[in-house]
Length: 37
Image (cartoon, rainbow, N blue to C red):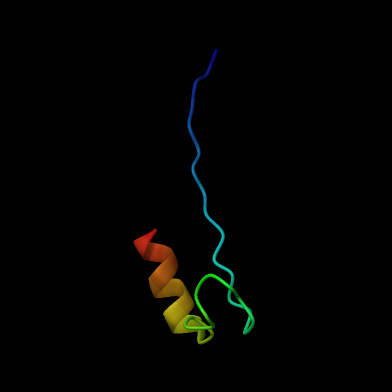
């Protein structure tokens, strides 16, 4: 059996996001934040 682990995250970049208050609306900011996860 092939055992592998995949971890992923979701970056919500909507202007009404409750978790980040819309801090990552610009594509570059969203990509930078995703890379930090």
